[in-house]
Image 1 (cartoon, rainbow, N blue to C red):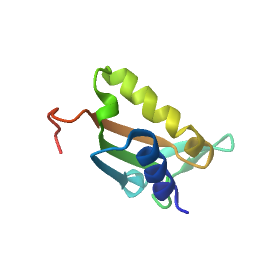
Image 2 (tube, helix red, strand yellow; image 1 turned 90 degrees about the vertical axis):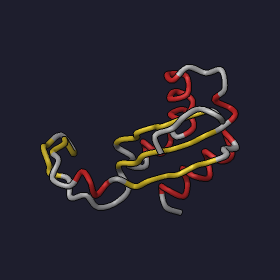
Image 3 (tube, rainbow, N blue to C red; image 1 turned 180 degrees about the vertical axis):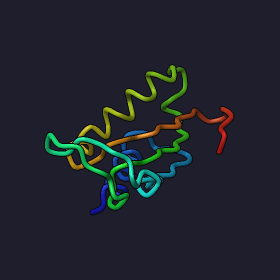
Length: 100
């Protein structure tokens, strides 16, 4: 199962979202430099390393933005061990305005 599919399944189970979009943005980071194995390397933009999560869930009602981010990061902690490098999170409760 892909990292994107695994993340989507975990988020659905944890938050029962009204809306959920998992976007692979790895290609947008091609050419960026990072440290791999202790050496500087140039990222080729392939694979599943950079994602954006857009999620609307009743579970976020009454939570601060930081609490929402922490909750999503806690659910997806294992994905960082599987190669996830960066995660942009756009959480909202139902009825809150989103930019998407």
